[in-house]
Image 1 (cartoon, rainbow, N blue to C red):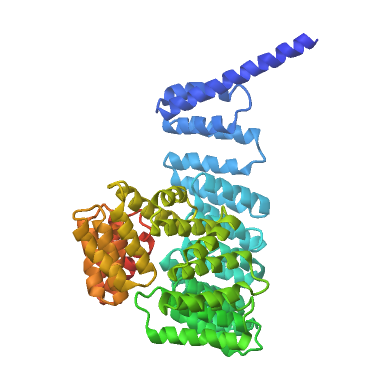
Image 2: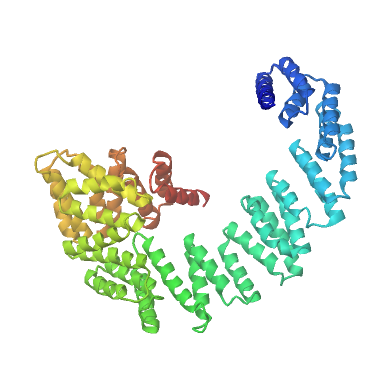
Length: 597
């Protein structure tokens, strides 16, 4: 008996394998447009037993390709007989009629089966899926609309929204969504997520905005519609309108300024400084008793600092205003874990703009001693403290601080930044081989900025080391680079001016021009700086600093020289010729902005 069972199982397996092979052969014939051969195979398989859905699909499409209408109808009728509960198969009969040119007859048939299914919610969904599967999304939409009239929105809104989204009927989706929210407010969260398709299309989002505005005129206190209107303004980048709208929503929902604060943070992320600053001032003006008062203070300082940091030549009055605001915050709130993020910006101002490294060190040491700080923030302070120490010539103290952060955050971005700073310190000191070994590791850093900076410095060393027994040219260049880091601009300039005479036609020439341009920026001669950057990207277009020079020249053109035409050309050149550049994203943003003005 056991032997008989084994033989039967083996026979069944062989038959199954044989059928699978036949199916594959039939599919191959179909895909090669050998429809007669495909028909012969599928016909044989189809009548052996209950055929798979794959065989059914290929057999039906083979008969359609051979223009055998009656045979195709019989295949569908046979399938319906086998699976009478699958009403989606009814669509296939109309599908066959349509494929053979009987479109009117097919449409009458579709209308008939649609009307007959509306009593049952499940049948509406199954039949609508059948319409979608056969490429009739309009019929699916009509059926869902019939179902809604009979049973309301709730059973069908998810499916209907899906059809609208998948067919990119964004205006219809907008109309349906607004109607749905008004009828069934509980669907708002889902609808809001689904409207992303609308928000991605300018015409559709404007259509949605106009619909909402008409309704809000009659129902001004509808929170959900006001929320959607806010979304429209944000996606249209109409931040001034968004600010007005969010203030109204905040009052309507009694959010105590939280909604305005969120918009301020969003504007800051997108470098929309005016509205961000207005939002933070709004929070501050709500008074010290407001729960978000300190968030507003910190946000304002953060926005003002970011605005300054993106400027190639910050206004001295802006620096004074920001410094004063931070001092006021310290006087009001003291040095606590809630205020250290703002006070950290004061340390950056002292170091990078006011050239006061000693005051920077004193302030950072106080911040580090503050209780309840996150380890990552303390590490960030240590890195800046290391920079301030290095500016003062305290090499070993800087190396110690960098080493502490690298050890604590070995695999994190902070640790990689610390390693890069340590490698650059070695480069400044002329220890090129050690710096190179560290930079080679950092080329694979997780952050693009560190990876790019490591690549640039590594190539600088690689291209210029070993050209003479003492590496004197690179040593002198690194010395000039270090002097500029220490804000000793005149001393740096003296070294740079001697380099072309000491080492004529040296491979460092492009780097020398670039560093000279940076010196001129420090001296405030931006026209001369731009000319030097121009030499870099024109004379050395394949050098690793060419994209840096293009970007800096573009920024000078737009911010200082107010030459929008020149800036547009420079950013365009960077985008098209240096697609892998770290600056390409910002350059593209600037180019598109200038192009649209």
